[in-house]
Image (tube, rainbow, N blue to C red; front, top):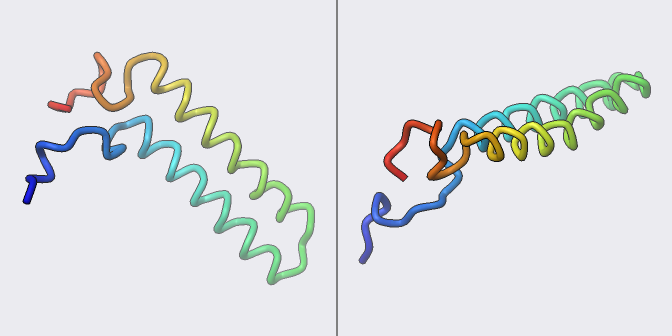
Length: 75
């Protein structure tokens, strides 16, 4: 049985956290306003999902991804 700390690349980085948090906020906004039948805000929440992907990619590109120079982790 392997140790979890021996396995790298589980997305435990500032880039991954930022991407997931932004996408979860977008999903929550879209879901809440779908139930409230406010369609423009549903689309606003849905638009945050690809924004999260872009932010995560940009942060990874500047070194905040897993094993990145600025991530501060031992991955």
